[in-house]
Image (tube, rainbow over all chains, first blue to last red):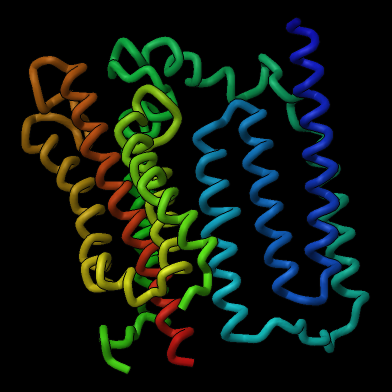
Length: 185
Length: 140
């Protein structure tokens, strides 16, 4: 039974990763920008499924709501302002191609040196993670380790994160935030 | 008059569930996946979907743009004040154990308050970004 379940995970992983590549190509290839935005939404939904398979439900919820939902809405609204047709790019194609090739080579090189997925000697397993996993419930009484790390052990970081979100909101308000008076035509 | 009738009837059933789910994610963040960030995002997405079906004017009457701006400050303030309060009670900054004698209850309630602050900020910021875009679109 366990082997069967592991196989299901592997099959689902492969299927989702393949679909991710297909949607990414579809995003780049589509000329109509509304189509590209919808493909971005599908990409976000697939990423949410992938996070769920990797046992990160907190991230999956966020990705499903932000990546597939809210950012698609924002992009669509931006398209209503700027129009849905892609502008013909005027620059040459050689320089971007070189940059993409260089980035690909760097990613492949760096990927080769990453620890294997789920490896027990990965740096993220060795440092302080074990302490959190052992002591979280005893010290904070919170069974969900993600919450106890985010809000208690790493409270500083989450405060900073909240400030970043707040700053982003202020910046958008400064740029676009002159609302019409309610009820006024 | 009857445009978006499918969207409207589906949302009528779905929106209460979405709002309830957002609160469940907020409160249940200690035992199950979720927390302030997720809850704020889900609540905001539900209301944005509502504005698609029923128009942004109706949403503006329920969730006022000015109120949302104030709320985004309040969320950060709740978080920061919790941290300062811990310092006042002879603890370190954001060390919730200083609040009560029973450290576990103190930690739990501290996390609860802080998560509420995060939830308010995330919800308010997403709503105000949405308003900045949507109300501008209507002008154009």
